[in-house]
Length: 316
Ligand SMILES: [Zn+2]
Image (cartoon, rainbow, N blue to C red; front, side, top):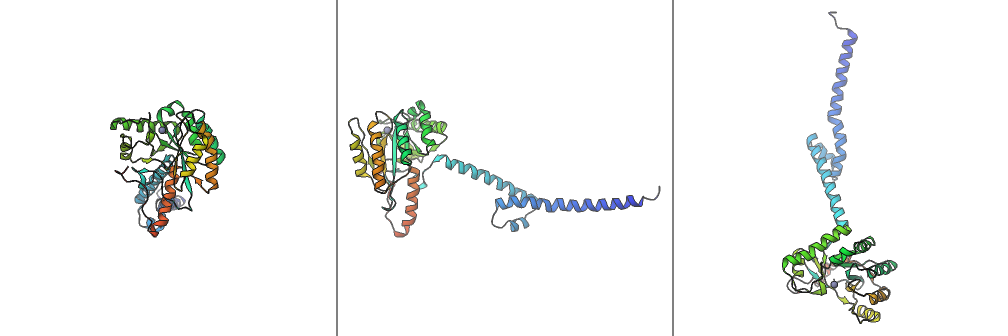
């Protein structure tokens, strides 16, 4: 057995050759093929150029970065979807209305002091029937007692704002202001899965510390340009007139769905909506109102439009 078996010897050479070629294919081309998919995700401009200039290690890093970015983007998208946001211009500002063209007749109905039994759901039924969206400013302690009603509000596609925990009018120190607002926001998130960057001070009081805290945390403080002026003695007809006489494009309408007997509001609401629709108004949530304002501003910047709302700090 001095000589090697010729068949064995040829087989060995062939096997060695196949192994070598396979190693080259697997080691060089296969990772390239696999990685190119990742690079396309991470850098859609010119994946071939990027790939050609990278080693396998670098390419894998790029691929991982691509995945990380994609995950972060998904989280941001989710965050956006579940946040009642405020455009940067209005963060930490107070607004009463926004400037819109007469041609862009949008108005925002807002309802305070809920969630509240009977009336909140009656309001929701009317809004559904009229196929419009509104914004509800919730009181924390009411939300604690009626979480299911608040869930119906968001399920119907309406926006939420923060109206403090206990609806104080009097002066509060900063730590109480923080508690009033942040406890309410935490419960809104816990109950509905939504975060809100919108705040409305109880009674529209801007000087008791709550407004200062809200500004410092970049909430938009939403006042109003139309007040239905609901009181114990108001008839639904009076409420209708109060709103219709002050309605304007870009306006914010103050109404209430909670905190007491809201029969007159529920009676007035379908009439208010119908009449405003007849005047050509569409109804938007507060976040949508700011989006419209932003679009309006972009189209009018070139025309040197005067600077409208928001009200700067120190004036309100
Ligand atoms: Zn209120």
